[in-house]
Length: 74
View 1: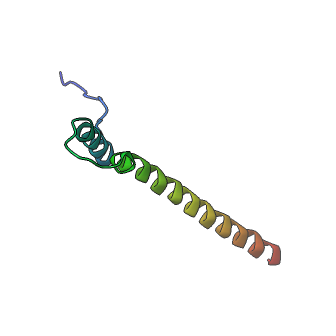
View 2: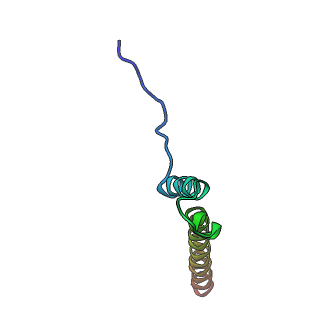
C-alpha cells in the first residue's frame, strides 16, 4: 500500500526571510539602518506587485479598446 502525500509545499519567500533577518538585526542593534530600509523587502515587494497590476491593467485596457475598435469597422 502506498501513501499519497498531498501536503502542500510551503515556505517563506526571499523578501520575507530578508525582512525577518533585517528586523532581528535592527532589534539586536547589529545594524543602524532606518526602519524604512529595514522594512524595504516588504514594501518594495508590494510596490512591484502594484506596478505590475497597473501595467497589466493598462495593457489589457489598450488591447480591449483595439479589439472593440476593430470590431466596429468589420
